[in-house]
Image 1: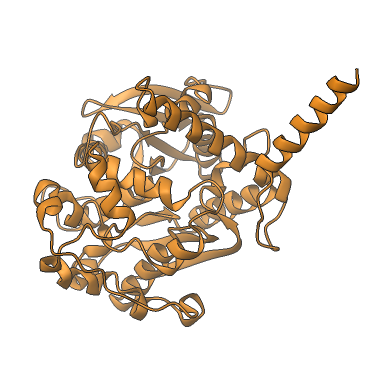
Image 2 (image 1 turned 120 degrees about the vertical axis):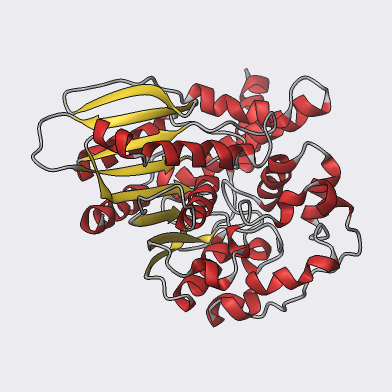
Length: 403
């Protein structure tokens, strides 16, 4: 009996040690955050072991969460929800029930997950789309683009762009009774990356006559040139999205070649021949003073052109929208952008806000000082966080007012 009690105590101590993670003082509901983070870390460790022994690719294991969280297209007394396809790309469409005398608004939503995991059918995304459709009385199109590592850049961008162009045709808009003047494109994380790139591309596409009214970008990932910004340095071990995982997502977006991951992790993947691009992501001139703190800016140097030659997407504006020239930002739609303090991607968002405002684009920037990457999704998990509900409400209230 004593030995069983001792084993129980030891296991409990080890489990508590594994779950516990020092967090900044202002993070709310710390134990819930720790449990969430431990869940993600455990899945990552399982993925590493599976890949090490040749059982499964790391991202296949990470996709388990997507499968576990999957929910079908369930209609109710307020919404008609269907899985269909636009331009041969799977989408989930949410349409409010009931007659209306006016055309509806629409939001084209792109899920996150590092271009490697996630789906429109995951419970958090399904719930967010349902809330959006109900609160905005809008048609929501949630896009299921193809994922890495099976499909690499620019497949993900092409899938989303094809859906957007299909939806914005006059015939499709009429089918769904959508007002062509009240359409938003939105996405979180990697979905925010795709939404940003889509908005830039649409601006000068002669085949598209309809204009996006709003781009709503939720803690987007916007550049791969400099992975040593202050937010990468400070938040590399923060909950949910570590630097290691973000760099893994980036490298898998382009290739399964591990040499790219190693180069990106050490910030030696961009050759000196492309150094002129760093002016678009130079955090020393684009970040507010309080985020620079005592960090010193060092422009990455690398004489090896091999990686960019093999993977030209590394310097492609469709992958890194922050590389867009200043004049290409002029005329972009009203922008709503969320950043989180304890997020490796924080500085991407701040730099884009700075560049958009300089280009004369109207921007509403909501920065949350007490939270971390992916927060919007944690309003539907068993460990749902109160701040996630508040941020979701703020996002939908703003869209409701401005779309």
